[in-house]
Length: 372
Ligand code: GLU
Image (cartoon, rainbow, N blue to C red; front, side, top):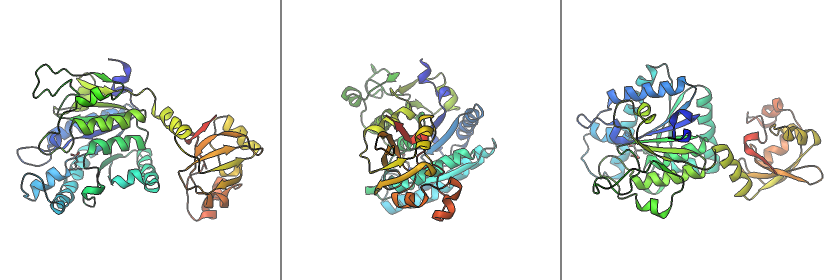
């Protein structure tokens, strides 16, 4: 097993937990014994310096049983009621389990829009970054109570991959009830073998996905491959592994899994995306001091900007130029053109009084900057 296909080498790990693992099938409540061992594994990761973000399914599965709703496909409003009922129980269980390891759990419910609309995307990302900085473990699920069919992910595999991309995680683990991607469906084909490593999602790989399972889980191999595509494009390694046994993350250290391995790291993938795919929405012109600071690997502060051009919004890509019009590179701005005009030339400590709110210290953070 290469070093790349190891959970121990991750810095920021997103762990997605499928409904079937979490729900005690007999009682329809949280499978507490199993969750205790997952909690211990998460605590062990954090102890060795890794950051962990949990994306958990199970709200609907637990809520529907608690409310006594029938098996099978639910009507939208019943589904939403089940999610509302189940989520509070799910969060409570995580809070108790991780609290036992002195870890703080912070619930974040996201919708598809939060990962697609730029403003909301930036807000969600900043919230998650703040939680990690403060040492909390974000517990994420889709906000099923407000999401209707047309505007929802529906499955947490893809949600988890979007979250991983959003916060530049370098590992996503999908804890499932199957230990990886097989050459054919192992339930029907006894010759099927597991594929340990995948570097590209070819049509051949896609053909191996098969049909979605029955029961509580909304995903299947198809949504897992969709998640893998997002991960590969964003420089995040992804594992599919069987999480049903106790200590599922510990088991992944030497257990069977399929690892999807991108060619880039999250940082290089992000920089490639900034320099390549985006049409610049404007530009910022720097003074000589700022040109030098950027060359030395620093971020761009408002104080070093002489003028801004174009009508860009927060999060847009802009061209970074010298006073004589030479292009230095590109970056994503932390302020809109309108706000930028009010703070350029000023010290970072003055931003709050100039704008009436406290935004980022930098106009372009060095992680969001690519020099030519
Ligand atoms: N968000 C759903 C829930 O918490 C689960 C979706 C899925 O199974 O992927 O019940």
